[in-house]
Figure 1 (tube, one colour):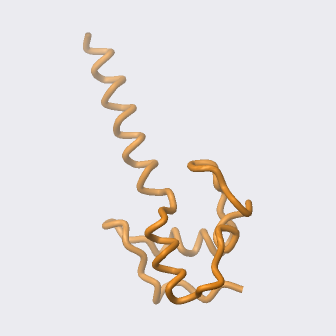
Figure 2 (cartoon, rainbow, N blue to C red; figure 1 turned 30 degrees about the horizontal axis):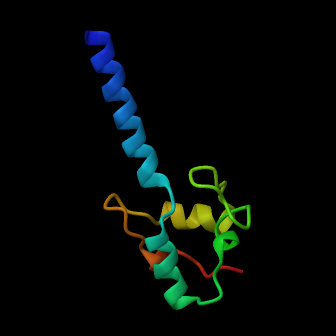
Length: 82
């Protein structure tokens, strides 16, 4: 019983941490207000990444680095995309 409980807790914790690292539509919409021509491939390697499988390009990594603990992006730390 203890092993099952521990496994469930580890799985839930992993999912919670992983979900905070993913780009969300809110982040995309927030960036798109400033840059209307932004698309998925502005931050990702693929034109239309599948949920949870989108590898980020250099710009996407900079956006990820500017993400605070609260999940919000400090856009002043993100240089303009090329």
